[in-house]
Image (tube, rainbow, N blue to C red):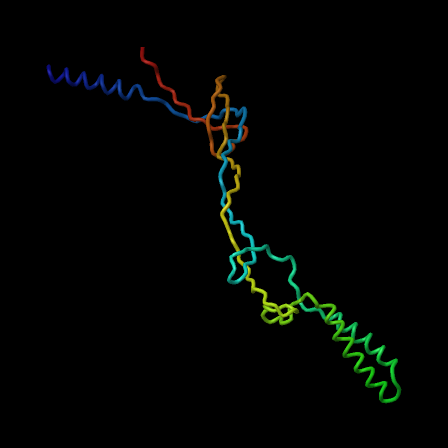
Length: 190
């Protein structure tokens, strides 16, 4: 008898346990809206600038826009003008000598006028035409990290209808017009 009672109770328990299982299936719901959701992120980047520093001097000056280089146009024009003027002086062999001397002097004068602000010794740049010492400069680059704020999509807030009810969920991608849903049916015990 005890055995039958235990068997009956076990049977009732198994029926209650396994008989109340839910049925699950998939269906499609109609998507009403999919609104993108954004987040702001800081994106680092390097920002660099160049400065000129005097050797032995801590003062910083801004970089020049264009570096001075030796120009030869003045020497050419001066040499031609000096040669023409020298050719006008003297006669015979003296005329040839005057042409050569005029060309050389004209080239020197033209070169001096064209390059009067350039360093006298372009190899080191320490001495100007007036013979005074000028400090040597070197270019120093300084960089710092700055942050740009950018927005990016993290997902979509999706509102959908299923059998007359409206639901909202968050999804990583845009589902389109239809959304597959999992439906679970379970009996209600009374």
